[in-house]
Image (cartoon, rainbow over all chains, first blue to last red; front, side):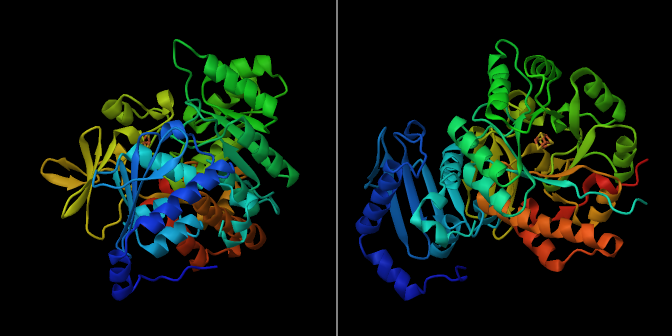
Length: 144
Length: 338
Ligand code: SF4
């Protein structure tokens, strides 16, 4: 499966941006917790505990804020600056997750923006890289 | 010219289990990895293998007849060297096909404690001549040496012609300028360097500054580079920064280019190189898959076609996409130095 080079059309984006970001954020957080619970996400929570994260989907105008404690991820609201913010388009996030595209390459090409604590960014990147999707039903979607 | 030389082994990096699998699935003969601590030169948060993932990775590779090398390529630091000794014991216990060492004290330990364990000499040992390599063989029975990226192809041949130790050279990846293992730039800026802490320009010292005009990269406060809108960014390594020297701002030390030896593969095979190494344990499984697949194809073609070999544009394209700096060079290999 190749993800086409696309950006969400502006009307879709403004619609998405207008909707509350709580449902997608909740979905993200519960997915993370599920993956963690099933040991698919080999995460050392002590590295993430007490930190705030934001995933900014640029073309959707969507900001998903969450935080971590010693045992799980939670949605985070409020306007506090996150410790780490990752911004990219929806298609680029999808490419990165499906390993079609290397996050470093996206970063070199300025398609992935990393703000905040660089080491935390590296921890998150390495964490996503270390997920072994071959042990999950999602394997058939993966490029590598 | 000998008629058929065996193809060099393709040695690929693995910073995680998925990267290891990607390397194996895409045609690596050998993968190399490190443990989760400062005994290896890519000691990045969240990267590398613990006992469980190492065992699973080794099983995965061995089932498919591939080899696994363990890099313990930092220098044991004063005070307490037990971590390095334990890493060597662990490598022997895991059943890796070879341990890559830089520190001669550790070579001695490994040889004494694990007489059967195959040992390789790391690029961080900085052995650029056959006398150094032959001495390591005599003393510690080193079976392979990885050459620093500072030799011309003629010089590599010169080494190979005078030693029984297998010679491994770098084939692709980010460049670390000149005389590996002796660079003090990162220490100068942060107090931590590849040899001492297993990392150049540690992430905890890196700050990205998102200005309205440019993206600034700072290492422990030192401005390493500024990227204008649309300009490709790079890792904030000191040697690849743009600095102001006598009124001019430019890459005063090294350009952020990647090494790529594809066009030289027939000569590399010809002079009897035993293995070609890909840099990048810090990179993702996607990178490992793309680079391994491309080099596998190119290496097989070079073996088949010998002097008729030519680099396919698709290979160059695939590699330049993932390369740092998006510019590629033959590095020292084709310098006219004698
Ligand atoms: S600063 Fe450059 S030359 Fe020095 S260790 Fe780092 S990458 Fe290598």
